[in-house]
Image (cartoon, rainbow, N blue to C red; front, side):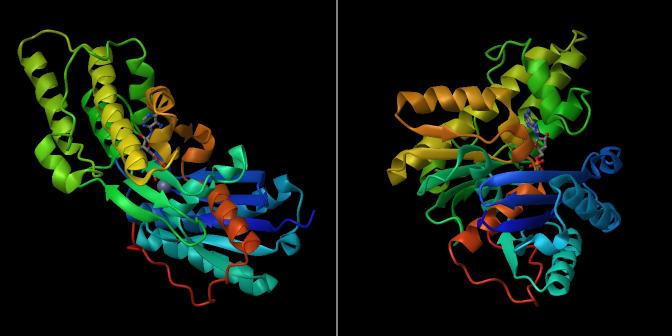
Length: 342
Ligand code: KG4
Ligand code: ZN
């Protein structure tokens, strides 16, 4: 095949990801996570993440090549997440990618983490619809983006003004006594709950908020509302209906996310929405987005859960697209840029 063979490295948070793709075809996606080392702190600890990346990097690259049945020399280009993310964590990936590119004499492409979350979808569903609206919801980000050409970048339309959606899931899970990371546990617990049992607030959807924050999100008020509701229950001595709280909370988050994504699409006259990031694995979010979009003639793409969370394949996918579209590689002094826009 003459499609580019690209190795992608992702280290922006707590997953050491190494993916290998050929064009739009995923060959291997290896992820070593330090999530368990962070669990007892209830969140990602930057220093712990950097050290874990350093330890996992070479073995993860070796495993990826072995599973893909390739030798490093076969690779046409190296792609790496340059930002945004944790500075020390990014630095491990960028330094590793530079060493590989230099040693192999192959080009390096520094890519934006959020753009990579979008590009990964073509490994499952084929060429990206451009333009499209991308909604990225994870533990670290909650953004609405307009994508015209994924290899050029993503245009932010809105973002969270406080907690990320995944952070809200994690905090509410913690207060319901569910383990970290809490999103998947809320998702599972909510199945047996009543989503209209409690009317939790929908952040930034009131008319006065829409003027300034039409495409922004806010989840901290929702989290506080859930905390107050649970405390009141506990004070009254009655048992907390965990499944109902989980389902009602999840409904409030998904309602706001879907409403704003559809509004963004309609405002731009765009008919394709892509949802990515860890929270895109949420079963209610997927079902609600598909149902409401169908009513408006809008198509929704959601990569399978394994591609939604941070991984190396998404970086490789974007790198391969940059090669395919003839983009100029990055310079070898490419910086790790933790505060890269969006
Ligand atoms: O993309 P990701 O793996 O890492 C970053 O934060 O970048 O996202 C992790 C987040 C966590 O907050 C986790 O609780 C959430 O995604 N998550 C979910 C589900 N699966 C993962 N949230 C809701 N429902 C899920 N099924
Ligand atoms: Zn991410």
